[in-house]
Amino acid sequence: MEKALYYGKHGGFVNILQETIERVYMVTYPPHSKTSKEPQISFFGIDFSQNREASLLIKRINSRKNFPYKRLIVDIGANDGLLSSNSFNFIQWGWSAVLVEPQITQIQMAKVNTFRYVDPYNDKSQNVSFVKAVVGPKNGIETFVMTSKSFFSESHIYDPDERLTKKDITIQVQSYTVGELAKMNNIPKYFGILSIDAEGSSYKILKQWIKLGYRPAYIICETIHEKPLETYYKAMEAKGYRIMSEIGWNVIFEYQSHVNDDENEF
Image (tube, rainbow, N blue to C red; front, side, top):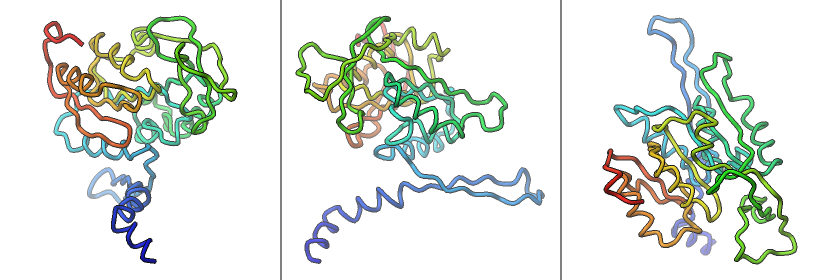
């Protein structure tokens, strides 16, 4: 009992709170007018993002007086589109999305997991695209390593310097540059959220977006394999971004202002 109490007082209770109650949210749909006899309806939901990034961002967006960005989330490394997903809740909330994932089993699960939430009224107000590919430096074919670690969530583009294990499987997958991906999906220069979880390629992918002039309002980027972080952060600051939050292995950038890209090399 003393050990349990010690653990609880040293962050354990807070951790339990954050991973249970704080993941639950309520969405309320009020009547069309004050005189309407229609009931006010509320629905409970669960934040499926890894470290509650979805709840953090939607609260931040709702607090803003103006949000002049297309309500679109681009999720690179979308996996199954549900567990630890940064895009699932936003799709539930009516946002359009582009989910990029090279593993056929994972992207099929993503389609199943999001199917009921896409354009529920069939009024063409929401569009979700699934791209079976990786994002790389060129259009073509890349060697991709499928690893069973963390339910295949750590699979990645093959690095010639890495040592493969007996359990690793290599496959050939389609690769698109950011420019080609954006063209295929009509992605505007200014959109809501860019999420990148590419197991060692995140910063390279992010650089492509920034160099092409894309300025998402928020960027969620996994940093576990990215070093040195100081150089990375300074480059983003020079492009008008600030670090809004460092949460788990992710950093969240918020776009602050327009800057002269010609004077700030990325």
